[in-house]
Image (tube, rainbow, N blue to C red; front, side):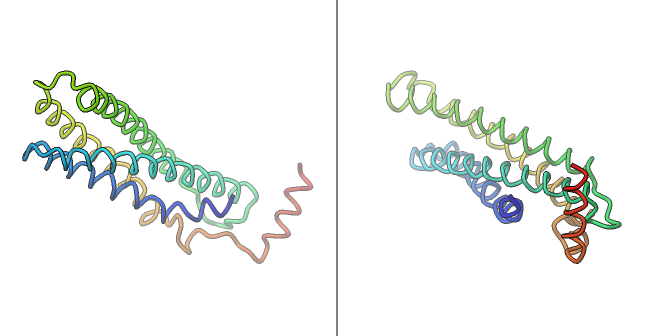
Length: 180
């Protein structure tokens, strides 16, 4: 699963960008009362949420791979910052669950307001509500990204500073397999 782990730094930028665009579209739709923007926001939200799932899957693989490398001694003298990884993972989980909640809520909004034409008097109030929810989501995205950036720029995760020693990789792997 090394392939998925290597994809994490590339994949994470898609949900970040898409969910920030979602928030912008929600705000524009609420301020200008244009359904075009709120409809586009819903589509971008769904795509961004799917990207969040991909980021979580690849991130889990990256964390698992780093832990495996650390356990079998491939990282030599590098110190794996497990606490920082856990904080990043916690914020990523909060972000994922929060946007799942928003996707479900937004889907109910689409079903009740657009399809069933219920509660049309509250349409504008709900737009403002989703604009606020999207801004709260931006905070979670920021916190997740801040912790991910700390892993890269402070601890060297994903850089040449923490890479497995491939010269002794086979020897260490053989020794690890013997221990099992």
